[in-house]
Amino acid sequence: MTQAKSLSRLDIPDFRALAGRVPGTSLIEVSRNSHVYRCGTRDDHVYVVERGQVKTQMVAASGKRCLLSVHVMGDMFGEIALLGQGRLESAIALTRTVLLRIPAVRAAAVLAAEGSGDLLARHLGNRLRHQQQVVAEMVTLPSELRLAYRLLDLAERFGLRDPAGTRVDIAFTQEDLSEMVGTTRTRIGQFLKRFRELELVEFTPRSHLTVHEERLSSWVSRQTH
Image (tube, rainbow, N blue to C red; front, side, top):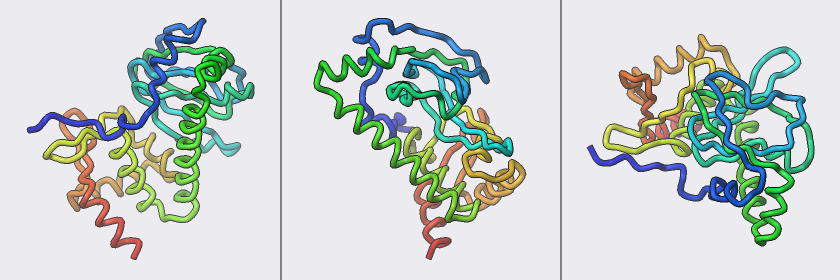
């Protein structure tokens, strides 16, 4: 087996290095399933994942949860603090996680002083485009296709490629996938079973997901044409 290569860390700004230049930055540890912050609260910090995994999610008035994104080592989240606004989503640790907690106002000042404001603008633009794509899929595609697109997205952003396929080492559950896709956990289980039977995905003994990207992409293409 060849050495796995990350598919997702190629064009990501180095926010961990930024944290080292911002006065007042601290290192915090968050236990699994604990909140980093909650929707509606005021928190004047942005966060960078030093170790572990964090998900962000929104909860509708009906109580239905929508998983917005997953963040891994080197990712920044909580950027709304740069605008001085309250949290629009909640952030929850998927694993035991270590975070760099960065004062938002000081981070913005450092970027401005270094002439690197375009770095942050590009990052926020990429985040916005991704979320718009997710919203478009949620309102236009059937749930099985939405799951397929989300699995391909996870493989592209977080996958480790080897001859057996693209392995996604994210500690998400079927419930997380149901929140990501906008359907029930039962239906997610049915879809995953079908995908396994078609040899589009598989689960390793340690419950890691392996996505066969070419096969899954071909299946998606057949469903949409």
